[in-house]
Length: 318
Image (cartoon, rainbow, N blue to C red):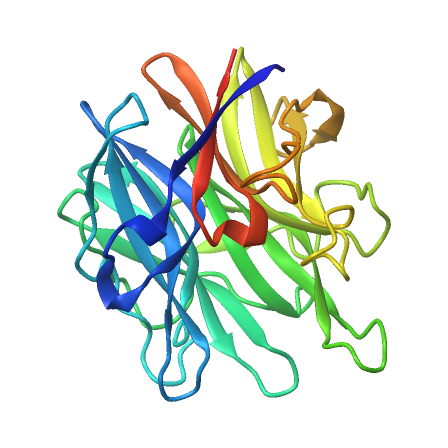
């Protein structure tokens, strides 16, 4: 599987986004139109009351040469959640897909905690204006922590196969403190759920669908699934649970798995050819991949250093 890297294609610091956001374009997700591609991402504003970040959804419209920026969202794409709800403090990321004349947006809601930094759940919002704005179906989530998935249910990717909605997502196993003076770190794996309508979901409760490569504390994030040559392929990112933010040897890399039935997956990271550059925007990490079809080509969006603080790049399958 040979990927040709096309470099960084979008830098949020070069544009004026809504909500005072100036940095971060994390977890890019594509919605393909006839003559352009809309790429959603999570960006951040600073909460003046607390000094902490709030994550917001924004988008950029790009020509299909993926060089020319046609427009960026200067309006609020989706409001943050109400006081005390699962997405009060941010949405990161949002996965989009067309369902008839509508665009469904599956959101990862973030809310802060006292003993650990955050928790999260998955919500659903619907757009009736071709993805310019989204409105929640309800204030609560469609998928949340449960008996065997005790925390951090986030990172949805939804695909309709036949009459069934399939969702791959991340669920937390718990938090660990690796040294007395370090903050707690989360450990999470990729799971699977199905639905008939995209709203009511049945989890494969607590089932980790991919084996670990880095040991039991490996963290797996942001799955994306695409069909290539009659087989289902999943791309995701993985890292060590601790000392990953500035240590390139422990930070995110892009992984791969394949399946014939969307349920049983065979992991093979070695088929990927997207490695870090010697220097530059993706030299220290490659994370948050998103695969999509566009005009008979297959592309992979992904973030680089500092979790996408300065944008995202693109690769094409040769």
